[in-house]
Amino acid sequence: MKEILDYKSLETLVNEVFWITVPGRQNVSFKGNLKDDLGIDSLDLLDLASEFHFRFDMLSGSTDAYLLQYSTAELWMEQIYMAANDPKKRFGFFSSGSIGKPKHIWHSKQMLLKERDFWLELTNAKGILCLAPVRHIYGFIWGLLIGSKLKRAQFLKINQWHELAERANINDLIIGHPSAWQQIRTPFPHQLAISSTAPIEKNLTNRLQKEGVKGMNIYGSTETAAIGWQNWNEDYFQLLPYWSKHKKGVTHSGENFEIPDDLHWINEQQFEIIGRKDAVIQIGGQNVSLTEVRNQLKEIIGVKEVWVKSFYNNLGLRIYSYFQLKPEINKDQFERDLPAILQKLPTIMKPRKWDISHSPFNKLKQS
Image 1 (cartoon, rainbow, N blue to C red):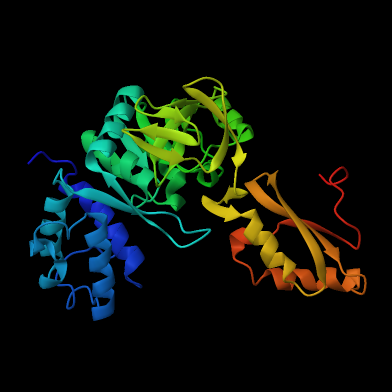
Image 2: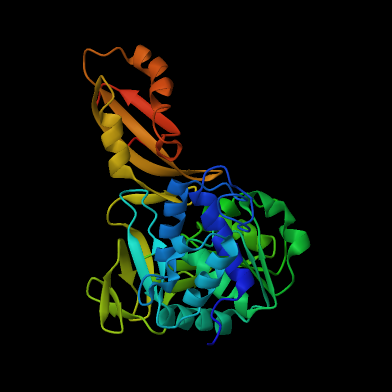
């Protein structure tokens, strides 16, 4: 059996899934007896087995891979290793679920390995520093699949950004996401930075390039994996060679994928992103629906209408809202009460600045 993921790479993924699935086990290594050493109760055991069964396609074929018949983490790892390196099985991922229920997404190993080999040839990387979660598809491809082919693969937490300068070598790929790149304060010249969840805005890439950082934006989703890439000093995205332009999106191997963004095609291989079709933006690496934010804000007592849009501050993309009040509502009192009302919203959905009036929104006057 040709190895796709080595044991060490699998341990990185298994531990991350373990920590996110079983409460209170953060940073505890997945080793030993499941109940006695790790203290996993029966419900958590079911949840954890379900996670691994899906992610490694373990229930297709032999029932030997049914994890609940084994009592130790080491026996689970043996079954996971065999499933992960079986070329006939798939890898499973979850969509973000930030604007709806998370979806189960399957990817064939043949397709993922094709992408891995493309990036290895394009970047000529010698090592990986991955700060993206490896349970998500980009952390998985760039951190695990690519990292397992290189001599140097390191996995850092987001709060370890300050260690980049001392850990990185000249030919390392550094994998992050837009909000994380905002936190960089220590220059690490000549490294190649990969933005793995959304394009980084020009003002940030310009600053990083002045510090000597080369970079690349990757375009795609959990459903498709990568579709294209864009060097920071270029205006357009380039399709990966096995994708083709299609009427409603892109296609490969006879499968068509509708793109959630409005794309402007320069030619058959190059495009630029105009914006989301469904008014979704990224804040802190998570998708946020402006439509859903507007619906939530309209529920506030005394509000007649709300207009919502995005804006940039020094930390990245944030939300602006304009409240039109009902005639009988006192504007000053509403403004005093609003901060407490907004505390009920999820953090990424809270407007960071707003205007309040009894008049409709005037787009010509609002910035």
